Length: 270
Image (cartoon, rainbow, N blue to C red; front, side, top):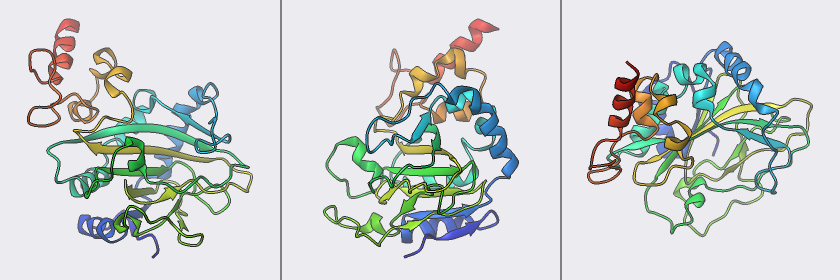
């Protein structure tokens, strides 16, 4: 199976159908290339202090720089709650009362990096497999994704596999895409970073989204306390976790909505 490819003018139904059939989907030119150039410029001052990976999985030739939501105003404005993100999340995680942004990192994959092990993102929970999806993730092409700069490899359709099945040596395909594109894949889809055999550095932003009753990959409320988040859009603030996460989950203080912490901080500053 190939990765379904859509355009910026494709319908929400086409995106939903692609995710159902393949567990993944690539939308070419979802945003303008200039948006990605602005994000790269905003993140550049922070990347040199980011350590490279120290395991085979994290990659000695890969840097993952965090705090993207604070460090990149362009990301906050254009990508964090992009309409395709909301469509994909509402569809894949419709069974959950709430779903949230779980992770946002800026990736640099350098020449010489080998293929990453194919894996499912749901493995991060260390829990028995569930019969439904709890994640849908996105990889934004901040630079072109090519065959020689480590474009992510996926196994379309693997979200429907039995838990014991593993990919064969020729079942993965490369997500080659121009700058400004976005690759969606559910938590059960096998995928991994590709081999970088050329001269360029592949730049990407990876965002992960999960049902509200699971721990976020990042401790968002520690990374973005009210003093940092209070000036952001209310929907984005709730999206990172300042909300109730279920009928009786995620309360703060005296069984209050965590968004009250933002309102109280704003009142103190006024």
